[in-house]
Length: 463
Image (cartoon, rainbow, N blue to C red; front, side, top):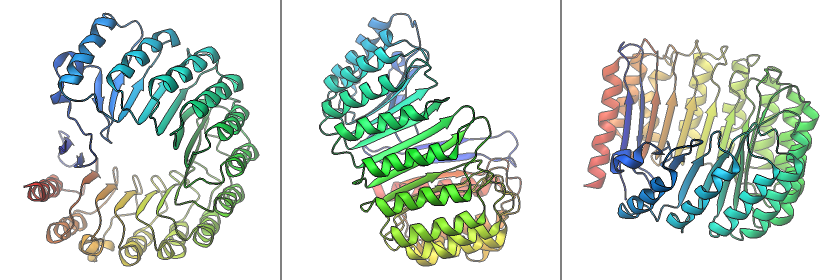
């Protein structure tokens, strides 16, 4: 079932702009309007079209509700959904158990499960949950585990979960440890990865998001990276993210370079790489230069690259120049590129224009381009405006395009040229995301026209 989902959040002030989120993507995008009233309050679809269930503690009529869910989802032929997200909020493990049992009856062919655990879950709950997942969804290929500040979960709980999952899910290829908000539990993550590596032998994709509360040393983060490269030498995809909620992000140029070197030199089969180190005030231009050289030299065959250095305030335009000139032209097999330099206030029109020209000239095989430069005050796009219209004529294979310039001075003339270029090109986007919120230079009509062009192209391709 293919549907287009277009969402526009309009502002009362037409000058402080909105967001366009348009998708014609994947096999499972279901608008909420297709659900009966008794379901739509708890089920929703996220930006990627994944069906999600929101679980609240002590919700009334639980069992009657799930009986209705089983009947209604089957009626709407959603029982064949392959992706499901379960959000447990403040629920205890005894409340999660019946959810898993009921869900397994409805979604028997599930291949991708994303589950968030509340702070009330303990080690015993992790063990029970692991058994339930392994027994209920034996065909899982991807599992995402979100730990929201779970003080009662330590190494024992994480190791038990890893062992049971690794042995029980023979088809598991992807594992994502997401939003692991912890304080002093970095060692537990190391032990978890060690146990997972011994059990999940077929794992080829790994995502580790470390969200730390309190101070932590750069050396400990480097040890976790070392554990990953040592235990998972056959990884094809690695996405590493670090953020310290206390604001003390101590990762330096030297630490970033050491971790990048460890990853790119030891993971010989790597095709997809993501590095996210926002608000690391000690990462500067020199770090960007060395990282660019390491990625270019050690992993020239990368197919997907995502770099996030949002709010790294010490970076200057030279840092972005290194990415543009020392890295982008050399990744000849690159198909997906995501760059997030939001809140890096020193970036200029010249550095952004050079980046865009390098992408248009050298990376014409891109199918996905995601650019985030929110709150980069000095970027107006005026210089790029001279060639902005050629972006879509040069990137002919582009299917997924995302541009975020909220709270910025992006010029209306540049955006209009981008819009005209899109209209005149043969590019057929499946997904479009534009965020120009509070860009007072952008005219509402221009954004609306971009949306209308997208819808017209979409209609023409499906008729």
